[in-house]
Structure formats: C-alpha cells, structure tokens
Image: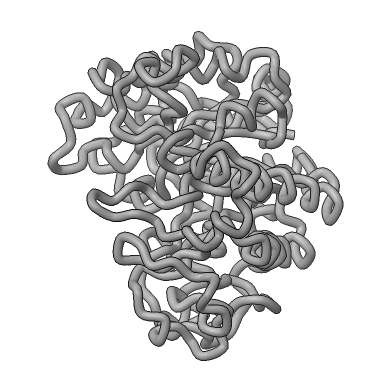
Length: 414
C-alpha cells in the first residue's frame, strides 16, 4: 500500500463509504481485502483537470479554504467510488500548482498568474490522498504555454517572455518548441521540480506533445529543424525523436530523483490506422499519434520506456471509425510481453452528455467496457475522465460501474 497500512486504508475508506446512501454493507477488514490478491495491480483512476478550471477549483479566485474543501471532496468521492488513484493536473499551462522555482503560480488558483494562492495545493493533495489510501499521480502538460497567442498576457517573469525564441504560435495557442534542446531541458526541470519536492506516486503526461493538427496551419519550427534536424530523413522523424528524447530523459530522471515513482503517459487512443501501417489498429481515425502528434506510443510500450500507458479509448463499442472493442484488442496485443502496464482511459464525460451518440445515453455502456476489457489479461485497470463528471454522473453510468465491477475496494497498483 505504500504510505498507509491496509488496515488504516480500510478504516478510512469504510468510514467514508458508511456515509453513502445505498452503499453496500461493509465487510470486516479481512473480508474487505478478499479479492485483493487477484486485483492487486488493478488501476481504478480518476483524472482531476485544472486547465480552464474544468474540474477543480470550480472557479479561479476562490479562497484557500474553499479550494482545499473542494479538493478534499474530490478525494473523498474517489474513495466512495472505490477508486484507488487520482491523477491531478499540476502543470496545465507552463505554470504550477506548487511553489515552483521555475514557473509562476497557475492563474486557475488565485485568478492571476503568478499570484500565490495562500496554500500548497500539490503538497496538500499528496498528503490527503495518501491519508485516504489513494495514490497521487502528478499530471503535467510538457509544451502548452497558454490558450491564447499574446505573450504580454503572461506574467512578466514568465520564462516564455524571457525566451520568446522558445515559443511557437499555433492554432490560437502558445507552445514551447519541442525541437529546441534548451526547451526540452527546461520543461523537464520544471516538471521534475515537483518530484524533488513531493512524494508523488507517478509522473503523468497526457496526449499533448506536438499539438493536434489545425487545418490550413503549420507548426513553425523551420529554424529549429535547420539547426538540429540535419541527420534525419525528414522533419517528422526529427520531431518524433524530439519527443522520444523527452520521454527517455524524463523516465531516467524520475528514477534517479525518486526511485519507485512511476512514469506513465495517456496518449490519444490511435497510434496508427491499419490503412496507414499494417501494424496499426483496425480504425479510420482522423488523428494518428505517430504521424500527427509525433508520439511513437507503440515504441514506448514495446521498449518499456514508461511504466504504464493509458490510451484514451474515448469511443463506444461498435463505433465505425474507432471501435472500443478493436482498440482494446490492439492495445492488449501491443502490451503483450512488454513490461509496460496497460490501463484504459474511459470517456466518462460522454455518458449521458447532450449530443453524444445513443450508446452513451445508455447507463450500461461504460460497464460494458469493463466487461469487455476483462477478457484481455493485459488490461490492468481503467482511468476515468474526469472528476466533474464523476460528481454529476447524469445517467448513473459510474454508479453502474460501481455496482457491476467495483463491489470491493482494492489497493492501488504497486
């Protein structure tokens, strides 16, 4: 269990469960863990997104006490849902939810970038998660600077303002240029500052490497390619190598700074379509991570550069362009024989949402995902996007998962 004993976790979790209307009767401490041996490596995770105040804090500018209470409510809900891991976004836009020595405080806390919120959100999150038997994975976005294109809107001390040559404007946003070695070193150091300060259980990247394509626009890295890309057959190969280097270097540094801390990545769910590459999945997705985001996620798994991967398989069973069932099969075959653990990212946010296809209006769709994935031994758990949707649960899809699959709590993956 890591920082708390199983008995302590059982006591804390059951005391919270006891307050939930309709919760199943709690077994004794011994009975509670009756399925723990079989499911000891099962991930039951929940993303908590902070960018744009999506999940938490509910709005910028809340008092420190209000922010803390909202965070605790998310952690308590994770326990009630019999989850064992929370993945908290702590660097959403080249900023920080801790007193970083590299980057400013996030605007999503106090409402103004660089303004201290009056408490330590990441430090509190780690302590409170561990007190509840939850793992805390620190989620970082490596290259996104801002969801606008005006450098002057950044706080004066921001590294992007000090190094405008590091910045690329693309798709209405600002990004650090992954092709510059100085950028790669900086973002790595900025992220790992959190690992040096706090006993986080994992470093977690999402799906943003090179940005998603935008029609009619190109990512302007001509100068960087001229300076550093000469040994590569084309720009795409050079870009993939830039991302490969970030992944390898981050993995090595995490293990050096805090041995035992995991490194995981949650990419877009399609590596390549079979129509592009015979090794790809039986899909016809409009985005392929290998070609569009320059992220060779399959290689990272096969060569065990990362401890776990959580592909965002955000489609329903039977979807003609990207069938959940076909993608789970493909990822299972990809992970087979590797040392990289496979978890599946689940689109909880689609369940019952307006405008989503009929399967997502069925409370049982998400539960069917877990039933299907259980037929693939390589799948060792699921992570749900995201915390706000777990709280609302409009068609009770998460409640159905709880009833069908999470009848007993299990310890976090170790």
